[in-house]
Length: 280
Ligand code: PAF
Image (tube, rainbow, N blue to C red):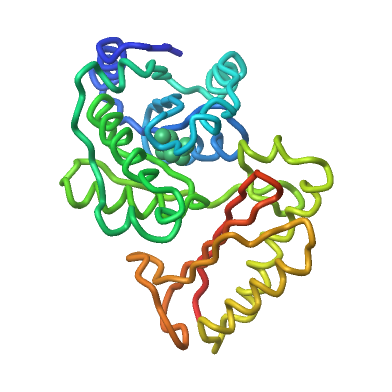
């Protein structure tokens, strides 16, 4: 496994794989890897010969410097896990490499970035698309894999790739869950044991909404989710969006097609997200 820190080394390592006739699958990450990330790597292997993983804690997608500083990191463990998985190249640039002095180019999906989670995290999706576009330009993969858990992010990236005619395919991989149903996330380790137990309410509320989806209206699903979350006193529902699954457009009245339910729930200062696409 080659660990590259410069654009030049990363490109050379990928060129060597291409010279052997291999196709390239990419998994962009911010490190502190868990099983969720490793399932993205597995999906990349199902769709390409060689896999490149980037590890870069991207400052431009964090609103608060404190959140960026608190982001967990464990480079040695990440590299061990990626090596064991058979990853060919790990790209670990520093901030100056991704954002060279004097840089001024941003990439933004103007509508999708500024709705839903984008309203509570201004600039977040602009930061994501800017760094992902740069990573794609560096690695030039054939496919790239993103988790469905960050549902809006996945749709935003698909839109960017379509709009900019980027020559790669974006694959969404299903959310990996702990045995009890909690979606895996780097933030889970920051939960107190009590909040960790209470956090089950996210997947439970989505399961209840899915069960109720047939013949339901958007208002019905709102009630089911809000009611389930409010039954857990440690949880505060901070976001609930029920939108058309692909465009993220708001919908009203009875469900008519694939519908994404996206929730964010706070436990103290830790925000967890989960989502489910339901069909009526
Ligand atoms: O999902 C993430 O970990 C990040 O948003 C990503 C896609 C690696 C961009 O920094």
